[in-house]
Length: 369
Image (cartoon, rainbow, N blue to C red; front, top):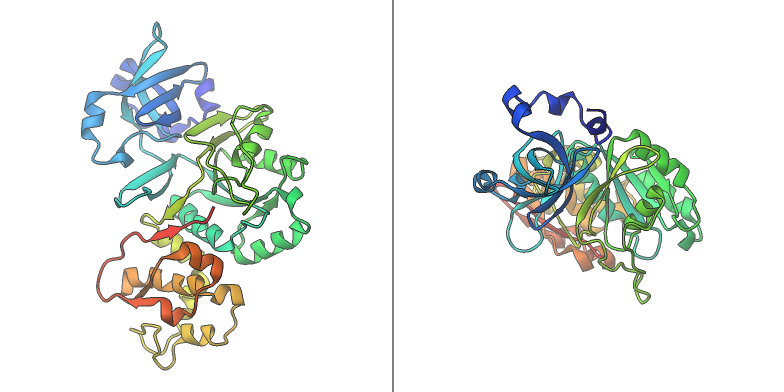
């Protein structure tokens, strides 16, 4: 049982198993997943695994299948070094997005995570709005968020960026690191040691795998250099994987997310954009659409209120109405955001579209990488 506890096993999961299940199956954690193929760990050994026919048949969607970080009950076949997964235990938390592509289906990026390390690079691809979207999904997952500004060796003034990020992150801790120079690695090691299961999330090329290699003390994860012409990353990590860190703690490496769409993140959006939500509540009319009515607090802020220019740029000005539309039938911004985020667009009024009485659907949030 000690070996399972080192993988994150506790009474939350233990209490879900019946006596009959204990007699037939073995608890294990999913440490690797790729196209319905899995690798499980029981603490002392790893097992190549597949789903039972009944479990696959009962799954209504991919979100009902095992994800890295899940705890499962499996039948072990020691002579083969293999196992069959019969049941997924109830998740304590999960980080989900809408699956990339056209189908609006939930994709569980990682399960049973305690801490999400949002990694971004201190090169010219740094994007504050991208981090805000990750924060919304992290708060919705129930995990603690920590922002990691990596590649400090490529930035002439990393402390200025740390201050800028801290001012926009509503109290989320911000750390500056460099796996190349070792700056900030002691603090990151301590976060991992005390953070339970920690998932590294971010775009391609921000250095997630390089940081994990430094924590593990080896070159287990493949890495590639970023593109020289624009400082953006190359897609290197292609599957999710869980590791135990020698100094203590558990980390999950994930592929860079080329596209980030919100999945059922209403509470996370409310937390991430509480300042703008509060401002919208100050509008004179309860059904204000923020499109020119007198006494509109949002329009006043856009036209010269207390927000900074970064906060007032169109993608940021759209974000409160996305949350408000879900519950009040107000407005939601269009989300052709990849290039708009970089170029700044025009005005909030030009980018808002009114939705009356329709439920909020997952909105694609493109990420430049």
